[in-house]
Structure formats: structure tokens, C-alpha cells
Image (cartoon, rainbow, N blue to C red; front, side):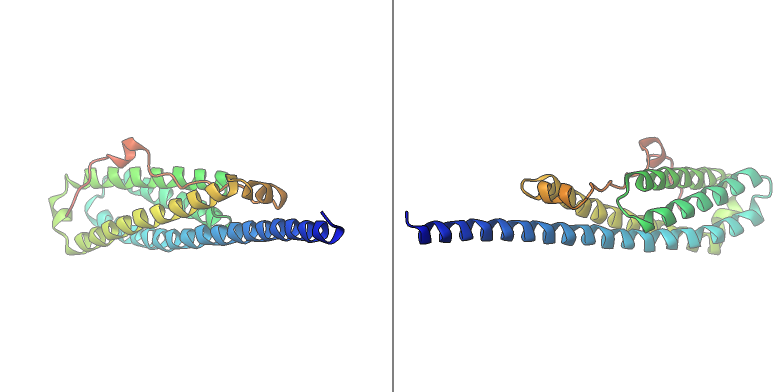
Length: 198
């Protein structure tokens, strides 16, 4: 092989390696931005949920005067979830933030379920038009959260797969692309809590 042929071969190899590195880096950036955007959709729906809860509690408060502890539990769980959501929105995919958000959301879902079970003892509350509207909006929001969570988890899985696949894993490690955490659903015992419809 001549010197010119060797030079062309070396330049070709360097060019291929450069294309692989640039392509892998750009793919990692693209997939990271996708899961962050997907999280922003969750954040919008969570905020909607948090905004509906005070209306629910205020409506229930008029009928459930003896259930103060339950109503305060819902508000406390809501405030904890808002704080966890705020931390998670600052760094979507961060394992600790996602774990805290998942736990806070599970606690909020549990508190809301307890409120719904207790509300069964108050027929006037079940018949209240305002309560049924809030419950319908809350139910719709829960469905939107589930869809947004699935889209986020799909985007995180795609990103993590790219980060762990060769040769992207070399680029990910070099440029500190850390794995992202999925947003877990509520624990099975909370998820299967009795649902009350008005």
C-alpha cells in the first residue's frame, strides 16, 4: 500500500470515528431533551391536579365537619406533592427527585382515596353539583397524568437505551450523560384503592 493510500485510509477512519462521536452525542442530547419535554407535560397536569384539590376540600368541608383530620391530610399531602414536583421539574429524570415525586404522589392519591371513601357516608355531598364537577375534572386529570407519565417513561427508556448502547455509552460516560429515572406509578395498594364516582 502506498503512502497516499495509507493516508487516505487513516483520514477515512478518523472521519468515520468523528461522525460516530458527533452522531452519538447529538442523539443523546436529542433524547435527553425529549424526556425533559415529556416531563413538562406531566408537570402541567400535576399542577392542574394540585389546583383542583383545594376546591374538592372546600366543597367537602361544608359537609364533613367531623372529618377535619382527613381533610387536613389531603392538604398536607398536596403540599408535599407540590414541593416534590417543583424539585423534579428542576431536574427531570434525577433518581432522587423522581423517587420523592413518586412517593409524594402515592401519598396524595392515598389521601384522596380516603377522602372519597369517607364521603360515601355523606349523601348530600355526593349529590352536590360542585363536588361532582370537581370529581369529574380530577378524574379527567388523573387520566391525563397517566398518559403523560407513560410518554415520559417511554422517552426516558429511549434515552437510557441510547446511553447504555455501544458506542453511545462511551460518549455518555465521557460527557456525563447520566441515566434518567422513570416516574413510577402509585404503589399497587394505593392504585387499587376504592374509587368513588359521583
